[in-house]
Image (tube, one colour):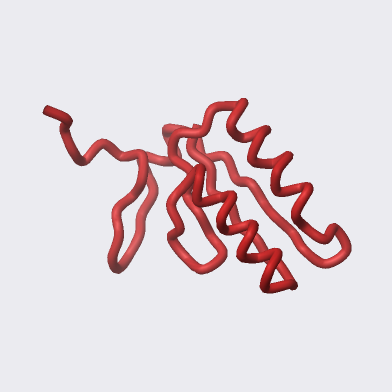
Length: 92
């Protein structure tokens, strides 16, 4: 499943750690937004568990947005970058 993960983290050290975790699962598209194109349910649960242990629940937030295949095919963007998860390459 394709997920967009966004966050707002108050503390610089915690923010660095959150970014480090999410980078294992996705591609950074903005400072606080990642696209995770191929997350399994297990990977999503593991990422959530790891992030829950790192954030300050009184100040920070992390949001997970599932994007279905139909919606993914309608995704638009402007500027640089590719849409992760869209097959625009071939392995030979």
